[in-house]
Length: 241
Length: 326
Image 1: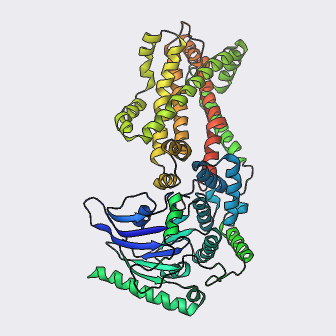
Image 2 (image 1 turned 120 degrees about the horizontal axis):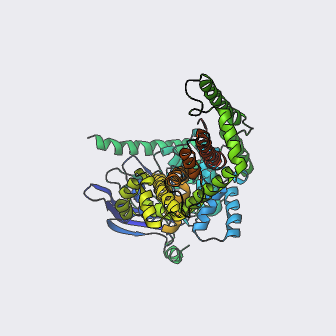
Image 3 (image 1 turned 90 degrees about the horizontal axis):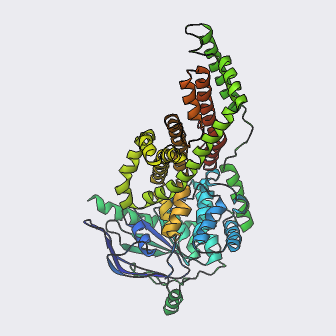
């Protein structure tokens, strides 16, 4: 088991609970999509899993070495080249200079950016920047990769391509991935399981398995997407009353 | 990877349903031979080619060419100014010894050069200015980093440093003369008091503008406090820092001139300010104007040779130059 959440709750000072009774188990090597509308405390949950924040109640088991995190904003350092950004992450991990260079080249090649290592972030497209950010996250060499709506700001063509890219990388590296998104289609496209979080407070209200057969079959995938969307909307409507 | 991950792994393998209830347990490891879902590109090579095409379409290209306007336009501006000056003088509105023309000043400059006074004064002042500035950078940089990173220090010393920046450093000249007499120490003290607050303020302003994501990314990547300051915050705040350095240089150069005008004699060497003061004493407008032009010229040269290129390069590398008038 990679991540185990039991009755996890989070309440910031003098506020309503952000998370309340979150239960989830995520297996090693699994790809889980975390779906929810705004205000479901997704980012808070990721921060807790990444050990950047403490839960107010409940228990959790996470890998001892923490998790790699990737955000919607690639947040590359503009004074460094693509390679420099990846190398800095390796440096902060204490990797030696020669090993750093070799590993950065490997990682950039993994995200198909072998030829763009000397470019600076402003010379890269949004999709390329996000791939550099992915290479940087992978450079941390942690089993668990948490992704907070990483493709939300990209155009549709690029996003489709990055879905494939991410799936390929997941297969090649055997990472455990928790992928947060607003987008039901994206969740079904990527996740082996889709967990639906309710909003205010956030709680896992339902989960669906997405078998490989369903994903390969466009009609079945569309049906599942429809079902999940209906459930998500029901959850959102609840707040209008 | 941590040890207890593998221990946990050994404990339970199946990732079952928790809240849904009716979902069958799934083996965490998906067999690798299953084809991906809605595949737009089949083979990995095809995906790579597709991506390469999209990257090419979406990223811009910069063209580098020699920009003569950068040289010719400022020259044209100077020529125009000199012509206007000459025109004004040839109207003969004032006595020629009070308002010398460009040619008179050139003649005076030539004479000063022949006497070796130009070389001596420029060398003395520039040496003082640069040495004082270097010390200011060495003191101001760690101070700025500390102030920008430690909240208590910032709150305590911030207003003081801002205040010092407003205080003209010439105000320190009397004190410096009383403490150090007519020695080089007086000049250096005034330079330091002018430059350090500017450098500190520039760096602190630069640090304030560092996007918060840069810090959170560094934290996620496991940077220690020192690593955060040196590897992330310092380079991120470089544009503000360089602006502060530039201002710091301007302040030290200005206050040095003021100090040299006021403090003459003793073991003080012969600087540009001394030259200016000598012109005043002799009521020789030619010398005065020559000194003013040399001081101005040194300032322009430093900007053109040092700060201009550094700043331009810095902004260009970060993609901040597009559309600017620099």
